[in-house]
Image: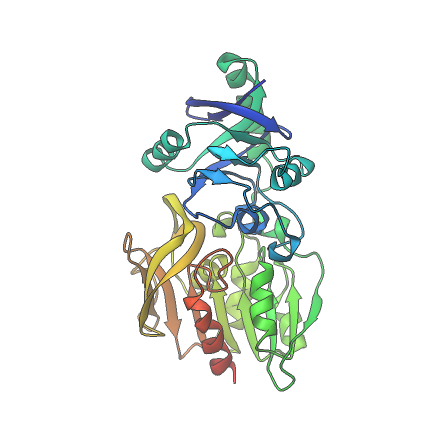
Length: 354
């Protein structure tokens, strides 16, 4: 059986089917040259068929220690060549065990150029005898997956609050609103705090105020921020009460709570090589990014500083408002995968909390 990526717009890309269960999702590409495990287990990639731009994948197998959640969240994994030899097929086996459809020997360059020109579209990853059969199988599969609940943050959030002990006895107590939080955000907070309590995405402001943290972190997460139920109202009631730090989805939701507008990017920012100009740390550095939406520059109130910009396309990548005790970034300062220069933003958060 051949493997196929079928886009909802009609384009078909053929490759080799390596296993898994046919699925549909948003077809996106990532420019990272390593970190395939972190990408596949990042909840922000929920329901996405991941096309990797690097030529070889699976070469260093897999290691649970670097996973960003307890399971794989992607709906497909596509590469030019995926390690599948008698000596090493660990990563491929993990994907197949998770029922993720896996395809290689596909013209990823042409597929990525198509996505770059067309923008993010839905598609299906499946096996079929030929192109016609693939098309016939793909369209109902895409409809089935698209019709499910769009609050993807809720789907990847914890279902009940839990606590994590920090490693700094005299450090602050921090609340995390989980919209699909990566493990490394928690790890970075552990290095700097005495206690962390993680709350589900639909938590009310009253529940967080009852816990009485010294700071609040709004986590990353998948999907359209406008589909996240209840979060903006909760954040509105927390702004100005304690210092708030938003990351990725958390940035978008914070900006919406402040009165800003979000919009869908043509093909998103996904990779570990995105340059950022940062006026909070007064520096320029490379970041790891994964998002399909952004906050519209100029849509925020006058007292909110536009503090970060993506130097590739000039999009707004962060905000700061001292008066309202909040700041946020549209990238991943916790890295994994990606450069580590932006980790200093966690230190900045702790300084503002204290």
